Length: 96
Image (spheres, one colour):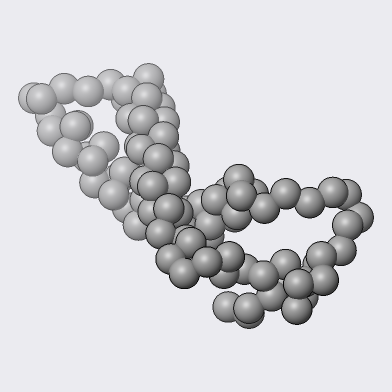
């Protein structure tokens, strides 16, 4: 990852360990995605302990989260950066 944004010059690593908080954001996004998957599965197919549909839903959820994990991590990093870096429209930061 580059040290500065090639477009605006914003320094990506604001302080040592700045992006540790993205783990919490990624966790929250994963929980929201799991809730969404369970609701859709429940509405479309329903849950029953007799036919192991809960375990099928868990397996499907793990597969979807595993495939989307790189995207979720990158998206959580972007969200975390948007929370702490403020800039105006068209403003160029010269922090190089």
